[in-house]
Image (cartoon, rainbow, N blue to C red; front, side, top):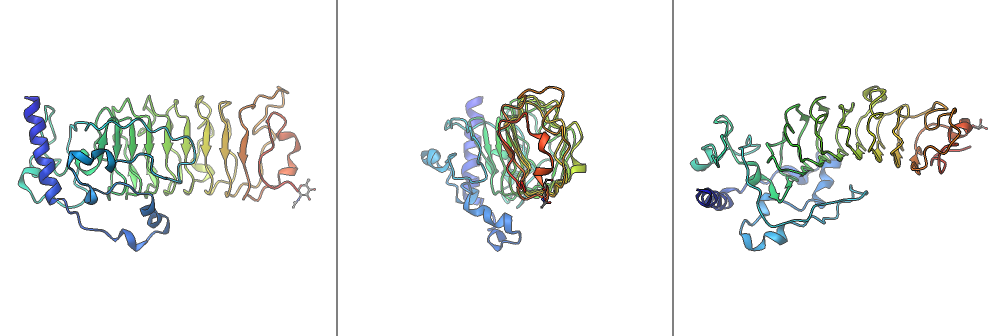
Length: 325
Ligand SMILES: *[C@@H]1O[C@H](CO)[C@@H](O)[C@H](O)[C@H]1NC(C)=O
């Protein structure tokens, strides 16, 4: 029974390989400057993707030179096995010309008959616990296999993250949605993801942060439209594993409060910060080097005169980068 399902999947894949010449889009047009640059990082194109299993290993190159990822990048070891999909996705582009594809897929699990179109692992590449959907013109998060641990959906057109998008994905460790058009994230979309460590969202249009899951270690929201009013006063307090907080190139006018002691890097360069509280980093009562780990604070590119706050840094291992005059 399982073998039969596998064979029919293989047949579908081959059919799809024959018919899936999705129309080449205006990607080269560069309507959005940031978006246009994406092409150079992009390794996976479905339309260039030869589905023969022989060269499966070569097609997927997880060690792509992605300069957006300037922190530790722990890609899982790629194993050349396809994760089986369980659901169909809303076809982001062409409706299927092939009548077989219009039929809901049934590989043991029920599929909503209203969802038609390509299953996620035919649009994206599912490899071990990783799902690669870079540059596939997605407008929503597609339904993901339950085993997904690493999601890459960079250089798409996703504008909104819905509360149910990651529901039940208890293994999900990393979400990378760099270079989309995301302007809002429902508060419940990420909050309950128990395994989430890395949330990578640079080059989007976010003005506010959603509620974050407590296990998060890396939050990258560079190059968005974040305002201080869009960050809850206690947003980071409970995030006791947070080590890298990248908020550069936004519209913040203050340094976020209640930063956890786990923090190692705080990047706030190129914002609109003019002032700070004396106790932003150090608790005056304690007189200890409580922030030993916080070695990397960037405040350059802000209108703040850091010399005005001489008693704000005593607990830090080194002074912030920025303007001392
Ligand atoms: C910055 O603050 C210091 C200390 O109060 C002051 O001497 C200096 O003139 C200020 N610089 C500017 C550019 O405001």
